[in-house]
Each structure stands twice: as structure tokens, then as C-alpha cells.
Image (cartoon, rainbow, N blue to C red; front, side, top):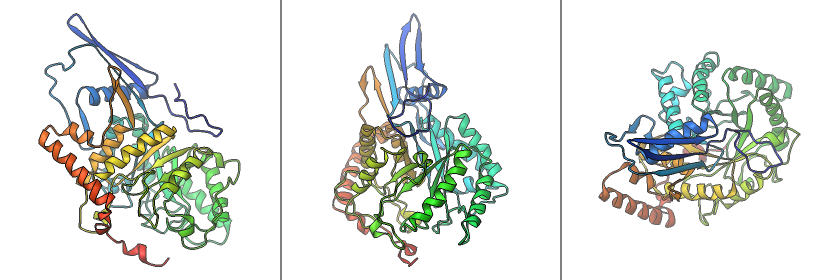
Length: 443
């Protein structure tokens, strides 16, 4: 059964219905569990949901699982358990522009044990009922040999019910992003030939989404007319190969961008444009509804909320927030910022109320307890009930689930309260933020 998308006048990439329900009861000396689901994906989600939400398994880290002692069956009476996804598509963007755990494994086919590590992460996604994964493709890949390597684990993603996405650029100059064309070209035909060649090289693997950056940097807009022309060409190539084109909406306001900027709103460029998705990207631990979010020269991020409300009426729209602040890339200070837990939960509930199609988490890896935030987001993306009583989510929920000590739970709750008050509300974050020298250099 196909999941029913939000009522739209534009096409939505279909996914299978993944809601499920369980009933359990004793019949004589046997405990019988009955699962109802409408697809193989629903059966998979139902099995892993039962293990984690009912039987106390914890798939908290891609390389570690907490397994309970089940010598004694824990269910002592009849019960019901049901769950449904808040979004049709949900998953993670691994920001491999930074040296996170899977950067080398994803981008270098010669990295020892790389394919196995990727499979571990795909298993973690499936066990946490996620159905999407993408990462940044970089210029460092070997274009002759890497696509066949990627095909192996993209096929495995398909087996596990995970949609394969790829993040790349038209000609972005930041952080070695993979470019669909490399040298400045005055002739559109020359650009066209380069793009066509690289699309052919990369589509050995069965990608379903390409998240393409069409500007040179996230701080610049460029020539809107030329971008629209090239985007339409790329879009047509991808559509022929069954790949859905998306792009991200940055938090930088158009009027503060550098270079040639068009302040006119984007318009549809051709009949293909209704197929183009949009990822509404926000940064750090600020929410769409916060009144104060002093990042990237903004007072808050409510302009991104307005953009999301507009875009969801004209094309497939996902929310695309961050789950950690990658300060370790810029300095030696490790930061585990608990306000991300509050912010991500608040935004998930808000986006669910709007029937947003997808939720993509910009992940900076698993160190410094970042895994806890990603794990929490994955589980908050589902709404569940036991015995027809809703499981009410709260920020410290999955710390409490994986840590058995009451004193630790009390301590963590207090840490989170203090961080939200001091680091976020009173803006002490400004003293912890590292400056990136390249961001200050002229283009």
C-alpha cells in the first residue's frame, strides 16, 4: 500500500505505507503477538518498533546496541501497541564535507572495512525506522571506480528499505564539493556536455534523490536566470533516470548575500519545475518559531518558516535542521549542546502539525554524544501508543531510556535546563562559537 501524501496539486515521490499495530495476549501457556501492517516496510518498522519501544532493545549507536536480558518474558498481560510515522520520508544527511566517522568509508573504495561500516549505519537506520540517507559527494572520489563501489551499498539500502540520496553541486567552491562542471565556461553547450558526462558516470548506482547546490557558496545567489536554465537541463537529465531533484534553501537572506543577487522570488522555470523538491535548512539549536536566533546575520529563523509554508504549497518540501554544532572542525573545544534536543523535538512536532512531507537531519556524526541527539530525532519521528495511551515525547527521553541510574537522569535534566537558559536564552553561545577564517575571506 502506498502512503497517502498530503493533498497536493503537484507530484510527490511515493513511498510505502509504514504504519503498524500489534496486539499481544496469552492463549494458554503461549503469548501470541499479532502484527498488522500494509507493506514489507511496515513489517520491518513494526518488528524494530516492538523491540525498541516495548521490549527495551536500544539501537542507540550505529556500532553498538543495548540488548536486554529476556530470560523472563517481560509482557505479563494483554496489550496493544501502534505507531505511525510523522513524515513519509525521514532520515539523515551525513555531512561528509567534515571528517566524520563515515567520510572515508563513503568516499574511498579502498578504505579498509569501509563497505562494512556503511552497512552498519544502514542497519542502524532501518532499526530506527528511518527510510532515507544522503551524504556530501566530494571532488576527492575516483570517478572511474567509485560509482561501482557505491552501487554495492546503495543496493543494500534498497534491501533495507532506505532511499538513497546524494548531495553534490553544480560548481560550488566550498569544501571540495563535487562539481557537475568544473571550469568556468561561457558556452552553455560546453557546460551541458560536462554535466551530461558526470550524470552518466554517477548514475551507475540507483540514486532516488539528488540534493544539488546551484550556487557557488551558501552566501551567494548568482545569476538567477542562468541558474534556472542550467537547473532545468539537470532536472530533465535526472527525471529521465528516475532521480528526483531537490535543493536546499539556506538561512542567509537574499538581501544579505554577496555577488550578483536577484531579490525577486523564484518562479517556476518550466513544466518540470513542479517535480523539484526543496529542503528548508536551519542551523544550530534554534527552532522555526524562536523569536531570537542570532545566526548568519539573522534576528531569527522565522523567514525560513515562511519559506516552508510557501514552498509546501507548490512542491515537495522537507524540513532540514542540524543536530549538532561541528565546533571540533574549527577548534579544539568539544561541545555537546543539549538545547538541540529541545529544539529538534519542538520543530518535529510543529512540522508534523503542518503535514510536511519529509524530515532530513543534518548530522555531524556520533562523537561527544551527538549519537544521542540523532537517535532521539529518529524515534521522535514516529508517534506511538501503548494500550491506546500516547507515548508523550520529552527532550531527555532517550537519555533516560538508555541510562538506568536515577541520579544520572536528574543530573542530565539539570544540565539541559542550565544549557537552555545560559547558552541559548542568555546567548553565551556567542563566546563558544569558533570563527572559520575562510568565511571571512573575500570571494
